[in-house]
Image 1 (cartoon, one colour):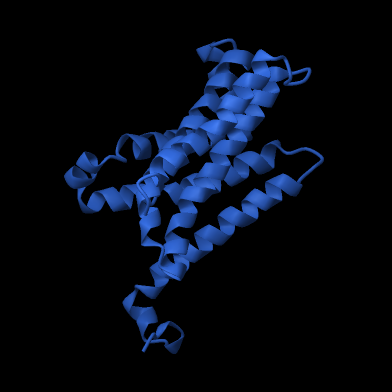
Image 2: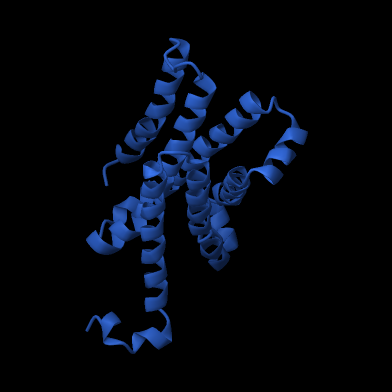
Amino acid sequence: MSLWAKPLLFLAAMVPLLLMVAALASNQLGPDPAQTLMHGTGEWAARLLIASLLVSPLRAIFGWNALLRLRRMLGLFAFAYASLHLLLFIGFYLGWSLGRVGEELLERPYITVGFLAWLIMLPLAATSNQAMQRWLKRNWQRLHRAVYMVAVLVSFHILWQARSDLGEALFYGLVFATLLIWRLIQFWKKQPFFRNFRLFDRS
């Protein structure tokens, strides 16, 4: 893979945020800038999460092993956008009130699952470096499988806050479900019981 791949990915992942900041500075975010920023950062967090989850299937199907070098950056940008999404919600809508945060978590299921998704992403982001990978050894891979739980929670977060237009929510749900099913199939194929079936016989 080209040495320019990571810098180009970094710039590409920064573009949506820079465009939102430019639109905010020029007063082009519509009548509710906070809502637009929240929606935009949340949407890009979901998109980048999908991109990071696509690395393994693309590697397995097409042999694009070089994509592994980009997966960590994709995951970290997904976490960064998710963190901005959360901060915008707490800041603009709750006025940095911890008491109101607790109330919203108890009263609104879509906020509860969204916050849980962010909480799970937090240790994944914190342990994404090579030093933590060496320290955790096999536990590192077990920990980072939790990203699929994040995908499930994000799907519910998007679906439960959708109102009349369910198209976008269903699209994200379908994509995340497909990626999760693919991962489950790969897991089952490694189990001794399923190795006896011709369906998984590569010989």
